[in-house]
Length: 301
Image 1 (cartoon, rainbow, N blue to C red):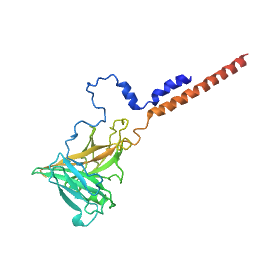
Image 2: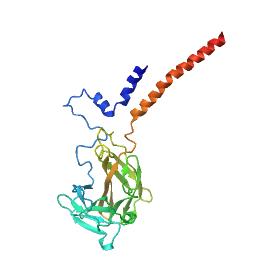
Image 3: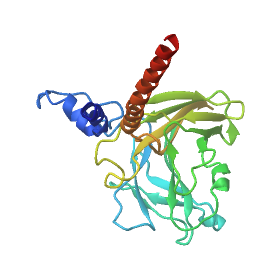
Image 4: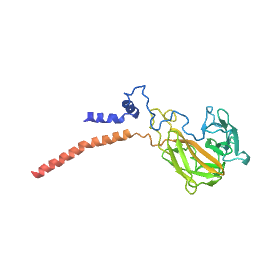
């Protein structure tokens, strides 16, 4: 009995990586295998929408941040601060080959800052936007988000709290507005770097409730945000476009989202303990049946 129990339980206690190695040990090294669902795509350009992405920052540098543009030709990045003198709550930073190095309007002011890149022509306006968090204390970004910064906007309602983040399977609200007025029935496209795409429509108040997809693949052994122990994150972008006043407006908001906190809980351990409980109960069931049979035989005698 003990031998059978050990044989049944051992496969369940094997780590997922061991199962994977066992299943694919016969594959030829030269075989081209498709990337698993949720794996990062080989191409860095996973979307055609305009983006603002983190650049290389000197180690330990927190007072400034390097941002680079993708899919948009902007001469400068404009940073909006959550507080400070009115004349200094907006600052422009020139974009070079490596992007632009941005900073809070005041070294003592932190919290979320809003960043946009703008490309404009006679018949179209394209805007990329993101939120950047500086570590020092600062006012809530509520008023910052309420402020109209350009024509067609995607506004988080609200932004995640400090040290918070958008996550898989969560629903978040976003406001779409044009010239400060909410847009009803406006399509809002969500794209993730794992290839997920979904479109949401705004309600009468211009609000779209966005469900983040559960598209991270299961973590491999040693994989994670911090040496295999931290949360994993991926990029996403929300975009929408509108024709108005003889111009085509395209705007995008991008940030990152994290994996579901419960994603990596081991199902193998749960199954193993369930099996142990079933096997442990088997002798008791047999004994009970035996006792019932003995009692029945005695009654018939």
